[in-house]
Image (cartoon, rainbow, N blue to C red; front, side, top):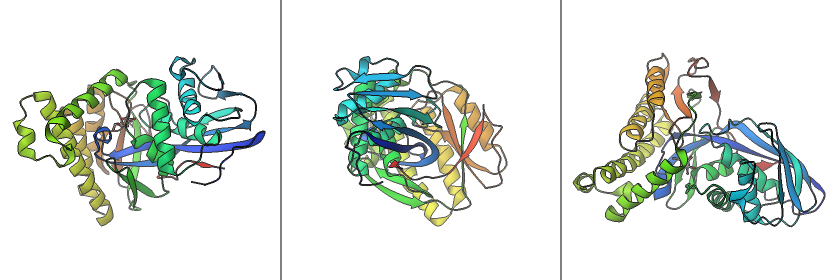
Length: 345
Ligand code: GLA
């Protein structure tokens, strides 16, 4: 990440921000848990000129362009919908100069690979937003919350901001500290599109967060909650949500250790166990995702598979030996590599 900011007028800018895949650690960030995502080599790029008093962007992914007058008043009311992320960022960073340009993105929209965080980070940098990766991430997280009403955690924006080539990040969401860990050379990461559009994501996501917070109100920080106290909870839903966060954070710790030891079989088992917990305790999976995970783990060379991101459809991540080929899985698999975080070019 560069320290340079582009605050001036009539200046050309080109900002790039990656999507992310969560190797392990989902539905834990919003209650101060541990997560382990990596920034990927599918990126969003904003290229343009800083000029005028509005933000006008065309997108190669969406037909309708966005035109937003500065200062932004109601980001959540902007149309077309993809413009809400742009407006949320503009409302948060309050640039004095506008931007006219183009958005190109390789991150499939709504697929669970954080297309929205990549767009937010790229727009923030293109508008002259500076600061360290954590500050940028916090501001883009707020932008997303304001623009969409979804109470997302810090993971996606922090991963897109702080990614390191060849590394995943262990993020402690209680301290918001991101620690890069090198990935073994013989580990292949695949993202497989389930073909199932994400459904119910917004309302069910908010409900999951509320339930986990209610469990934390009773037990304290869930990542360290004693197992016997979790099992004693009367409320079946809160008990399962707490169990998911507690066990998922433990899996993140063990996965990080396995990466450092090069113990790929253990890493794979943890990934698949994470899916079962997301299915049974967090209840964010679908029959399609479950079937795809089962199909993938039965293939030669696949070490483990799980849904990635918010769930309810979207993408499955698989970790595999280098020889495995998952390009024909689901409605299309793609090998991704761990990439650098958002930057100006
Ligand atoms: C979405 C949110 C993240 C995180 C994941 C689930 O991607 O934006 O903050 O909560 O879901 O782990």
